[in-house]
Length: 100
Image (tube, rainbow, N blue to C red; front, side, top):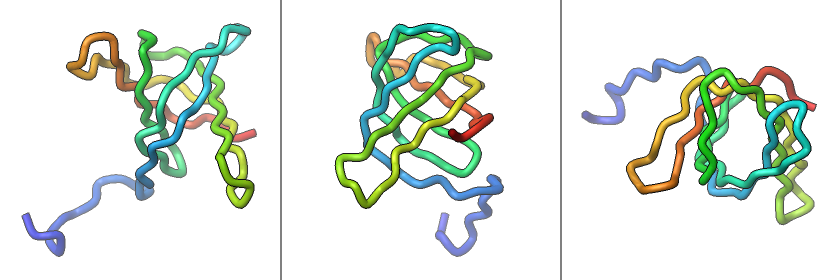
């Protein structure tokens, strides 16, 4: 399909990313790690070795390597969590509910 005929169905463009992030379940002090795949104004997708169920509230933190980019802290509701096909790797899609 040529790019000129592609009809974007999302309200906001996704920005590709390959950046480490940390997250924890809301109300927990235990921190987990993942890799951000993409980010938009209303959502995030990342991979992790931790199984997470749909509907879970997460607090996410990405601290950039370079000071020209601000840290990103948000609360996210998991809307889809599925195994990637690779054993022990999960793809998590979340809706950003608040940015701190």
